[in-house]
Length: 190
Image (cartoon, rainbow, N blue to C red; front, side, top):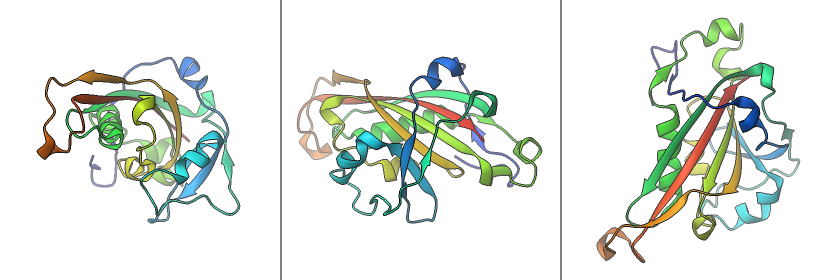
């Protein structure tokens, strides 16, 4: 993902009803990231997040909450999917799904759409559909690094897919022949 001379964010936008996507989002708590940004995730996931692979992300002592982006503040809703063919990493699959969702189009007018705030005011609601079998290994801190701008809020749901790759290659980290597929719905607004 790149920016256009500071004037735009390259993103791809696939049509999805924002009212339908909005049904998946709820108030969330946030976790601080090392770079000073923050990301939100579902309150139900706090205990699960403690067991995820990222040890640097811990809940704030005074969690803030942010509701989903309101319908009248949504710019785009983007969909993507990603997979990890070898190694069974839900994190790799989620990173690829988020990149797939945001990598092709540009919104160079953010400065005009959000006067005096621009990219600093962007909010991203990221819904990830992850196979339950591989959900525990999901590192949301790593997935959040895909997004160069904005206040990122995650919500997880069961979904995605586990499909056979036809071969398990130990050198590639395979424990079995599972391919892990994750779907992403990225709502961009302010």
